Amino acid sequence: MKFGGKIVDWVILVFILIFLLVGTYQRNSLWSSEVALWKDCVKKSPWKERTHHNLGFAYQEAGRLDDAQQEYGEALSLNPYYFLSVYNLGLIYYKKGLMEEAIDQYEKAIELNSNFPDCLYNLGLAYGQKGLYRDAIEAYKKCLEAKPDYENAYVNLGLAYKRLKKPEKAVQSYNEELKYHPDNVNAYLELGVIYKEWGDYPKALANLRKALTYPGLPNIKEVETMVSSIEAGQK
Image (cartoon, rainbow, N blue to C red; front, top):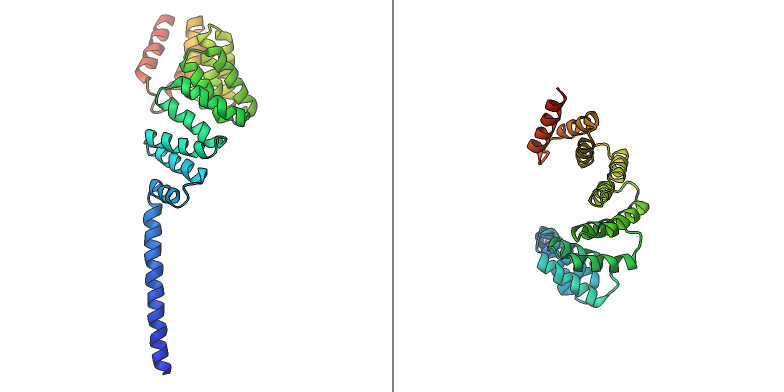
């Protein structure tokens, strides 16, 4: 009987191990896809705005913007004040080129959380795409009040000033960017262009050459041509 008991114990242990292995395999298969994971969560808890939001985010990360938009909409139908869905819906509209809708969502999100720098920054980008540069400047300033070292905020602030024919303020903004992010290639490029327009060729060359030291510069041929033309003019 004692021997038989051991056999029974081993049989039970084997079944437990099989059960655990099957469960582990199923969980691993589920976790292998964020979309599959959150679809499963939505199926189990369709009344929770968070599950719809997270499924929307998984779709967004996978580039499935229409599906993401639908899930964020589902989350907001359950809770119109769910901040992250309001904000992320703005990101979806922006990626789709729907600037007015993006601005509307960002402004709604700011009403819910006025100090969220990502939202203020992206609002500035959307205003800029619409040519509303004064509004963009205000958005960038608020972003920088919330997070003074927000990367590229000063660069885009400078670009907005540049569009409004205020190059001095643009230069100030680019230099502020470099105080926080000394490796920001866009700031060097913009400074180089403005100094060239001003006829300050030593500063133009210093900034453009600095930009050329960064690997993967997308418009490297254009910058090299600019540098060559300045150098030729100084001979």
